[in-house]
Length: 135
Image (cartoon, rainbow, N blue to C red; front, side, top):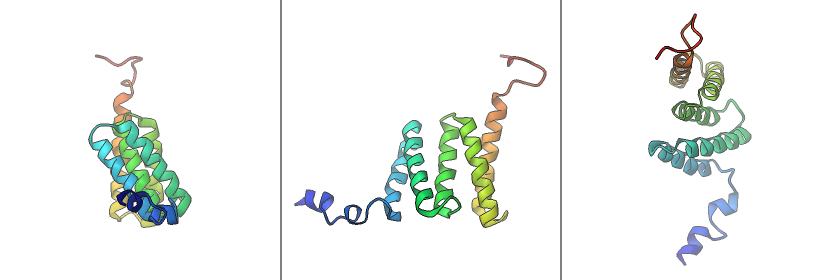
């Protein structure tokens, strides 16, 4: 009886499929929990899936798509995939500036993420005039 109610033919997921917006909330929450426990690789993979799904459903400039992109950029920074993080943060910030304006809180948050990615990349670059970093 319990199994039928959880996985039966009348559950919303089976009835409506994965394209219902609420069905993207669970994987987002799982990715957040995974990132909090340090499993950033899996969090990134799951968030990439959510981002792809949201872009397909809503388009690249929709608030839900941009929120998933911003979350993924943060995870990529933590996962030390800095070039991918910077590229995604730059794209997200540009899209939010156009869609929301410079004064919107989400635009400011994406600017902070871009600053984090830029700073992390700068820390990786050897000092100017030297071929290798000094220990």
